[in-house]
Length: 152
Image 1 (tube, one colour):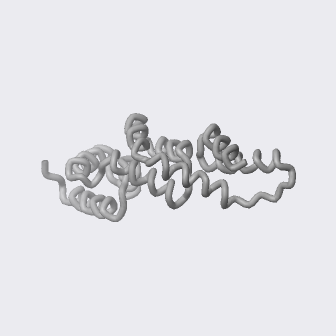
Image 2: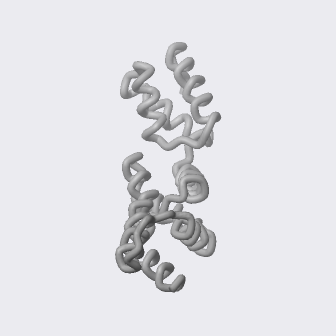
Image 3: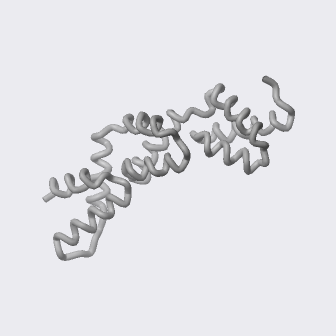
């Protein structure tokens, strides 16, 4: 299917946008919209980018999840929330997150807990604040408490 020259130009820009780093459909859609592309052109370009392998939401979820875990030390819940905001289908999110190695995940959680400095003398309040911190970073409460208890 051939495109009008101005749409061909948008397609080239979108390819470059996807080459630079892994993107999801929503990010590409928003970028094309910011470039004033018409809705039907946006959908045409997205289909073309998917067919050419520039956009792959499974691949995006895996790279996004690993990046957030390794570099931002985010837990599963925070990663899921961010992916939902990017309008990634639930099934793709769940499958992508299965790729995270559970041992690596637990090691990140342990490092989040051990690196956090909390000024609190009461041991119960200290543990509660420590747990709250890890939970805010997206780690599941049950895992957080399991690790805190292991450290005792």
